[in-house]
Image (cartoon, rainbow over all chains, first blue to last red; front, top):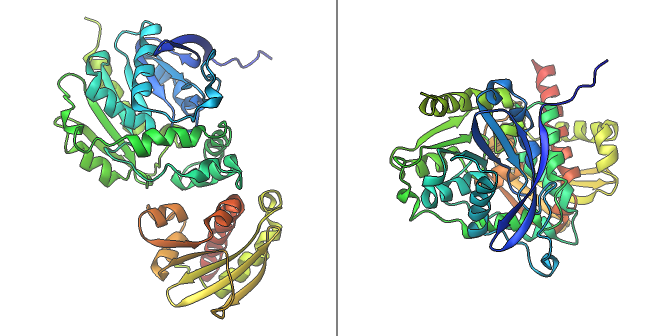
Length: 287
Length: 134
């Protein structure tokens, strides 16, 4: 019997951010418009496993799901004593990384899609780097998401992985299949100590666009916001309130979805994502 | 609709030793938990993945590690399958103001995975009860 080899391939690439080199791992499949996919805090690119192997997506989009430095198979910076510094993700680093990663791969104005901290950084990119993207898809985002930068995510009295997995399970919609639920939990148990907490510095401490989110100009870059009804960190109400501050932003609430749409229920997620991808593909059709 | 009451907690007690996952994640579980549903209060003592004691309306001098306090409506929604948004999880309900978490949060976090599984079993038992009633 022939081996079942996936069309999804893994690659490593050096990406420079602020004169420091990072060895970055990414998964790739498909042809056409580049679609960059950002995982959630303390997680990695397997959250996009089903999107990466969906022919309905990959026949028109080259899906590129990377691991942010410190996550998954992407290392902390070589040549730096990163263990002597607290890992706290910043908006400046996060944005510069995404922009430089796309430039390094010579991607022509990719579509960017991210969830949670990835959705939040999509708002930052829309405000600060609109000319570098052809569309931005913010999943589970709001202009202000405080409160989740907790010492318990990295504390000697508790076990990081088990706590992370069982806490984030409460952000998964109950309609999710048991396999996808358990995989999503499993990925959360895999983070290096302190990485989840450090990501949440960006998400819950630094990120506050209540006064600036209205600066996003959707005539320069289309912005789509999708939030699951079971998300309690950025609720549909908060996402809609955020979208109402941005002229031209498109927003929708996803039924039977939580905080991790791409990792929870691909088929349900695609009922919301497909029309957006169709719209983007139509707009950028070859003449 | 299922309510948080003494018969349901007895079913939970009977279910925990038979749950394969609890045999793994409950090995080091040890905590005393107060659950309140309106005026009803239950002190539950957990040890090694088992519910060893249910004390209804416990004396005020009895100690507990952490408490989950909510109205009967919150528990009824929590015990549904599927539960509605905002009531589907302890963190969700606490985050959005439907439930209060009190006490020693360190013990809560140390027992989190096992207690998470315990609440899943509570919902399963609540549904089994509802099904039997129907």
